[in-house]
Amino acid sequence: MPVTLITGANRGLGLEFVRQYAADGWRVHACCRRPQEASALQSLAKTHDNIHIHRLDVGEFEAIRHLADELRNTAIDVLISNAGIYLDRDQPSFGNANVEMWLEEFRINTIAPLKLAEAFLEHVAASEQKKLVFITSKMGSMADNGSGGAYFYRSSKAALNAVAKSLSIDLAPRGILVGLLHPGWVKTDMGGPNAWITPQQSIAGMRRLIERLSPADSGTFYAYDGQIVPW
Ligand SMILES: NC(=O)c1ccc[n+]([C@@H]2O[C@H](COP(=O)([O-])OP(=O)(O)OC[C@H]3O[C@@H](n4cnc5c(N)ncnc54)[C@H](OP(=O)(O)O)[C@@H]3O)[C@@H](O)[C@H]2O)c1
Image 1 (cartoon, rainbow, N blue to C red):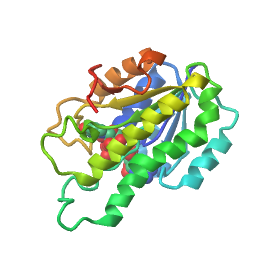
Image 2: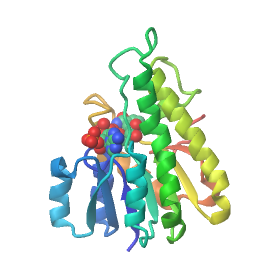
Image 3: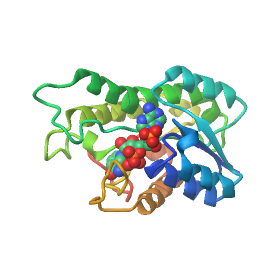
Image 4: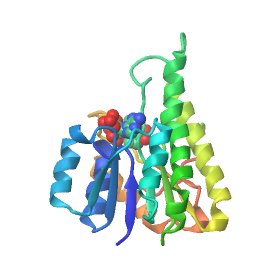
């Protein structure tokens, strides 16, 4: 039975990743900040004994190491760094840039995924599939930026893209594959009700890409529908 670990698993895209992988019989390590309040995830786990819930705030780097240590004998086929924040969505980030907010977006969207990869590297290396997957955003693309704004979110995801690209090169000798995926504009709390696709569509598409991820396309920036996103 393949194994996945997913961050931000209590709602939105993370929860849908859990739902689909668990339904397919994978062993799912579902991480979230407040398990006691994660009612949708808890009820899913009640009907699936292949779901294991862990408390993890990805901004607490010691906690990432602690969980990696707790799971030290667990090979992880697909590690999915999904948790993310978009704090400057509803307010302009240029004019009087809130530095604390910007740093927090970098901490969660860029630095935490790298710390996750560091902490769980051996777990992934010990698995059969050896895949590290980062959920990024088209908003991190320079070429796709036609509307400006969102300075904090855009820069944090562009930096995440740079991190993932380097990992794809540095970890290739160990046979580790890196997926860098834009989920589409999805109806979640972050995407809002006017988004174009459902979490089910987004996750089904991203799971197809994860499944077929190969050395030839490790580190390529893909959208959920298989289109390559220009940097
Ligand atoms: N929805 C879209 O249209 C869209 C488009 C492009 C990219 N994305 C990316 O897709 C990923 C998932 O987005 P989503 O739409 O599912 O967003 P969402 O509905 O806002 O959910 C975000 C998830 O991240 C978790 N999270 C936030 N900060 C965390 C922390 N410090 N530690 C652990 N978990 C934390 C949240 O947990 P809490 O409940 O505890 O806050 C929640 O589970 C993000 O990386 C996002 O940037 C989304």
